Length: 523
Image: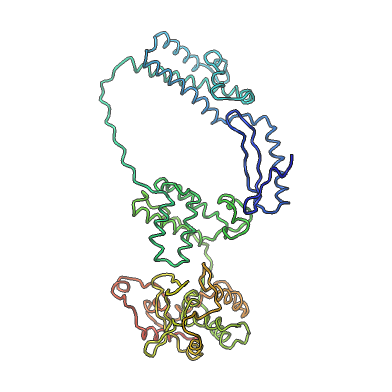
C-alpha cells in the first residue's frame, strides 16, 4: 500500500485523507474524505499512517457486518409493510375465508405466548430467506445478525396479524356514524429561500449603511447561509434552530476567515480546530443582533412566520476597566505636549500630528478625520469649520447623523493648523500619507501609529485607551462643562434623541452655538 494514494491536497494546499469503503451489493465502492487540517506534508504523512492503521483494523473486524438496531428494525418493518399491503388488497378483492382468519388467530396466540429468546417460531410461521433476499443481506451480515433478525421478524409478524384481523373485522359490519368533518389545514404562509431574502434585505438597507457596516452585515448573514443552506425556506427555520445557531456562533474561532489555520476549512472543521481562541461576547452579540434585525424585517414582509433571536444576546463578563474610557486631564496634557513639541521624536509626519490633534479637539471618528479633503476645511463668516461628509471617492459616514459641521478650536488655529492647510493644493485629500483600506477606510495608518507607536512610546499604553478614547474625552469634558446633551451629540455626530430633536429641530444648532460649546474644551 502506497501512502501517497491516501493523501490528496486541496486547491488551498490543505491535505485530506481518503479511505476506500468496501464494496457491497447495494452500492458501488466509495471513499470517506477527512481534512487533516495541515499544509505540512510531513505532518500529513504521520496522520495518514495513523488513520490507515485504524482503517485496516476496522476493515478486518467482523463486527463490521453487524447491523444497527434502527437499520434492522427498518428492514423488517419494510418487509412486513409490503406483505401487509398485499393482504389488505386481497381482502378487498375476494375477502378472506373464516378458516384463514382462524389460522391467523391461532398464530397470533402463539406469537403472544412466546417468551423472549425462543425464536424457533420464525421458522415455523415465517420465511427468513424471503426477508434476507428482499433486504439484500450478504452472507456475513446474515450470519452476524440472524438471531436478532428472527426476533424482530416474530414481533413484526405479530403486529402484522393484528392489523390484518382488524381490517377483516372492518369488512364484516357497517358504520352509520357520520364521520366528523375534516377541518381544512390552514394555508401555509408563503416563504422565500434564505439566500434570496438576505439579498433583498441587503439591497434595501445598504444605501443607508457605510461600506464597513455593509461588509459586516453581509459577513454575518453569510454564516446563516453556510449553516442552513442557500435554499432553506425561512418558514422552516424554527426558534430551536435559532438556539442552535447561537451555540454555533459562540463556538466560532476568532478571525476565522483570515487565520491561516481556519480560512480554508469548512464551518464545522474550523469550529473543531483545537487550541484557538473563540470570538468575544461582544462579537457574538453583533452576530445575534444582525440576525435579529434580519428576521424582524423578514417577518414584517411576510417572508417568515415569526421573529427569531429576540432576547438571545449573551451576557458579557464584568470588568472594572471594561471598554474604552476617556483620558484624564493629566493624560491629555501629556498627549498635547508630545504632539506639539515632539520631544519624544515619535511624531515623524505632520499628518500624524494634525490628525491626532483633530481627534483631540473635535472628538471626530478616526475614519472621518483621515478621509478629509483640503476643501472640507471651510469658513463661514469668522468661523472655520470641518465639513464632515461622504462626498467623494472612498469616503463614507457611519450614520446619517455623522454628516455635520464642526468648528475648528481656537487652539488649533493658534498652533498653525489653518496655515498648514493653506499650503496644500486644492482638490486633494488633506492627509496624503494615509492609504485606503476597504475595512477601515483611510484610518488604518493613523490608528495603528497612535495606538501602537505613540501611546506605547509615551508609556500610556493601557486597557481602554486608544485613538477612539479621544472621542470619549470630548463628550466627557463638554458634559462636565455644562454643554447640553443634544448640542454635544451634534458636535460628535451622534443621533439626537427624542421627538423634539428629531422632528421639530431638524435644522440643528448653529455654527456659533457649536463654536461656543467646543471652546469649553480645555487641555
